[in-house]
Length: 191
Ligand code: GLN
Image (cartoon, rainbow, N blue to C red; front, side, top):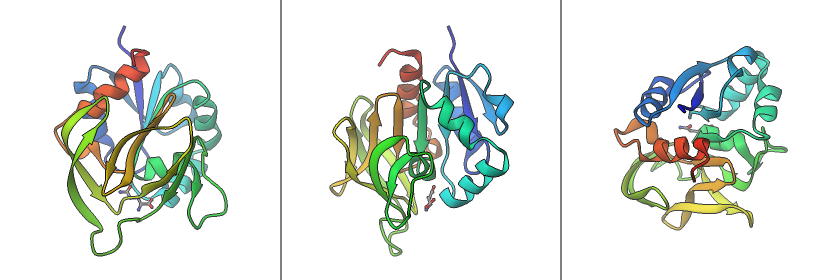
């Protein structure tokens, strides 16, 4: 059976995520309002600006909906999406959704190297994955149950915690759909 995955359409490279998920075999829709979540098996939260995305989640009234959805449905967050999912954000009082036991640092690679590409080796996914980093966060600390999937310069840049998947980079901005394929398999309950 084909799984249905929603891409949060508030900000970021939404259509690129849609394309990558479709090429990975999922049925995809863009979600923005509470009723759009009906019938979805999984959700992707794109990059953008985490504080802006949070504001828009509140504006569209879907913040609590996503928290409920997260109880038993897989979510894949990239870049700002990862920040929104973290339990701890450096310099911020509380988390946003607070789904994963990770501590993140925003804009963590510094001003000089704000954007760059790196050749990554991603566990379960494969080697030579071109990671596109744009004012990216990194994961400073991952809790016990969290599986580290990729590092760059000793910093954690991708991980999985049960039905949650995160990447500090933008897998949707390359033509390599391997990470999206892995997420589709996760939604299918195969991995
Ligand atoms: N720097 C952004 C933030 O803090 C994330 C960047 C991105 O998603 N490309 O939300």
